[in-house]
View (cartoon, rainbow, N blue to C red):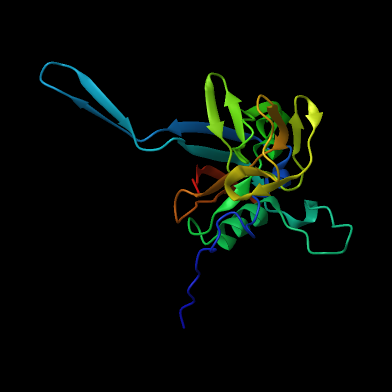
Length: 230
């Protein structure tokens, strides 16, 4: 009898996190592609009119591993006595757990080998200025000259919100990276935040290829992930 797997009602609730820390020390190639969806129309005179269909880009991340150990004898036992998995088990098993490209998951980029902690954390980010009326503010991060909304905050590290540089209280984190204050910040109050963030993404394809090139040694030449906009 066929089993039907459905998507979570709320995409950012109860999802798995990509087990990036399980591959520390292995060679990982990491490519990031940023893509907007635009339409540009050109008249006979040569004048152009452009429309962007989304505020945020879709980011495609391509990961490839030159070596995935499949030898259980080299896998250190877990301290709590639970089952230990090889590198291949972790990657192959996680792909299966997500049913390929069906179920979204979190990716903490800083956990990938060779990546900087700043790839997943932001400090002192200005997210708005109080006007005495507005209570909802979108968490965002600065990428050079671009201000990007952040929809997925890492719940493992509590955000810290500041009013004019002093820690603020009386706020709640809502879905999609929205901070809601109980009382609207006073007019002219500079609101900043320290927070850690995650990519919400899914695998780009329903299939993944793991090639064995030696005894108990595999490689994954390409595994693509793409971000999900909520």
